[in-house]
Structures are given as C-alpha cells and as structure tokens.
Image 1 (cartoon, helix red, strand yellow):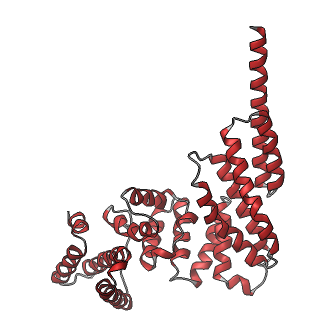
Image 2 (cartoon, one colour; image 1 turned 120 degrees about the vertical axis):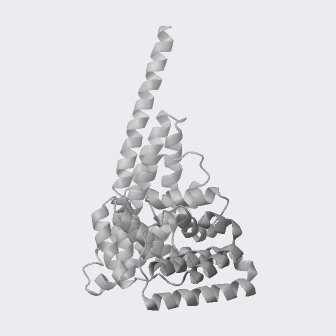
Image 3 (tube, rainbow, N blue to C red; image 1 turned 90 degrees about the horizontal axis):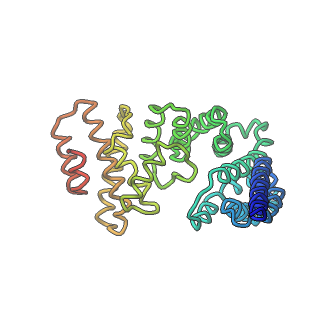
Length: 323
C-alpha cells in the first residue's frame, strides 16, 4: 500500500514538472525562441510522455523550426516578414490532422509568428516612403492584431485602407479589428463592403472576430466548401440580418452595380461551370440593388423586377428573402 502511494506521488510530481516545463516553453515561444521551446518540450515529454498537449505542442513547434531554414535565407526584411505571415495558411492545413486544439499552444504560436514578422517590419516604418505603402501598413496592422494590441492594429489598418479603399482584404481586416473592439456597427458595414468587392480575396484564416467566424461556420455547416463558403457568406449574412448596416450609394456606384449585374448575368449563361461562384455574387448584387431602390424610393416595379431575377436565379433564396 505504501509503495502504491509513493508511486502515485512520484507520478503526480512528474506531471507537475511537465506542466511547468510546458508553461516555460510557451513563454519561450512568445519571446521568439522556438528552439529553446522545443528543448523544454522534449524535457516535458520525459516526465509525462502521455500528455496530449505536450505532444501537440512539440509537433507544432517542430513544424515552425522546419521552416526556419527558408526564412533565414530571405535577406529583404519586407519579403521575410511577409513570407512568415504567409506560412500561416500552410500551418493551418497542417493543424487539420489533429482532433484536439489546445488554445494556449495556439496563442503562443501565434504570438511567436507575429512578433517574428513584426521584428522584420519595424525597421522599415521609419522610411518616409514606406509610411505610404498600403501593403506594409496592412501587414503591420495584422501583426499587432495577432499580438492582441488592437488599438495599434487599428492605427495601421486605418492608414492602409486610405490607400486601398477598394481592396477586399484590407477592408475585411479593418472590419475585423472593429469587431474585436466591440465597434459592431462599423464592423458590419465594413464586412458588407469587403464581401461585396471580392469575397475570393478575403483570407478567412487572418480574421479573428466571432462576428465573421461564426458566419463562416454556419455557412460551412450548410454544405458549402472551400472558396464557395466566402462567396455565400454575404448572401446568408443578408438573409440572417447580420450585414444589416447599409449606406446610400452614389450615382456612379449605382451605375457600376448595374454594370456588374449585367456582366455576371451574361457570364452565367456563357460559363455555367462557374455558376457556384457567379450565383452568390449575383444574388448579393440583387440585394444591394433592391436596398438602393428602397432607400431612394424608386418605382416599386423595379424592385419587383429584381425580385423576379432572384427567384429565377435561386428559388430557395428567394423564399428565404421574401419570407
């Protein structure tokens, strides 16, 4: 009996030592020292080889260490920082093999990646010309967002959007940071604009707010996959009254909207293979056009005409929209 108690105490002590080493490894990651983190995790495995979080963390850190050779080969800091951030999409694919996700590890890895990238960019910001580079401003804003410094992130993202007002990804990032700052009205308006411009240009993996991620999950659960999810998000966001903050269109914008609809209608007839992507864009533009007609008190026959087009394009969406 005494032997069993001693054995149990030893196991508990080993488990505590492993947990402490795991904690220290995460701190090393946040300090951008992936190799030191990896060595600590190996020690932790010696104390608790059955710990699933330690196994998970080891594989994640090892993945990033495998990329370090290519990262170190890049001399240009702008290119290096951009490359580090671009690796995140490959990393997320790597994570799909795991059934469980450990939030502390995910946070530490994210901190490691964005702090490493930001270090590359910081030396560039002092250059006067770079202060007008929307690409750099966007990347720096993403880094600060990833590090949890939302006010600083918004500072750079607001600057970026001044230079790239028609860029879907930049607008989506500004919308995302506003959502994280609980500026929900602004976030909804900006997300609506971003997904109107070009859903295919929006990197969902770079977004963090519940507002947009919950939308993505719900549309994905409906059976849409890959790029099609982003295309259908604005359609269902309209139906579910999520993208509910709207603005009046300028006359030039109305003309461009109608021209876009005309082009998409023509493409849907000549290129049916792309209907999976054309249909949601067309539906979203019909929604925008009806909103314009209602706001500007146009002849109701124009609204009825557009409703018929929605019905012809997708009867199910028409039922949901009019119901």
